[in-house]
Image (cartoon, rainbow, N blue to C red; front, top):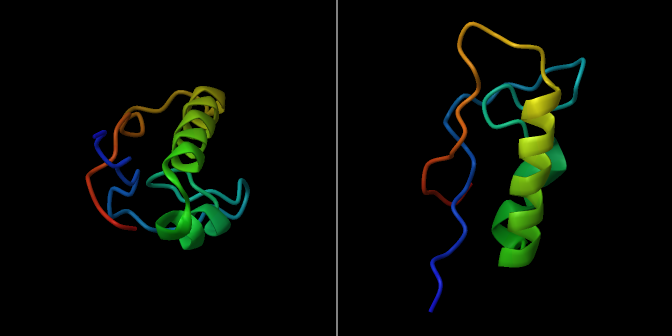
Length: 73
């Protein structure tokens, strides 16, 4: 049996008005709201989308974390 896909949430929950993404995990409001209802394939798709979003961000002194914590949000 495979492990459940962890949530990308890192408890920095604030939406960026310019991108529409959470500044902590880079998810959209819809992705945050629907996370617990998504199947594992859809959760993996969100993770792939997050990797692309992270790559598109300008470099910062402290990069956004590459992995999330295990959670339900």
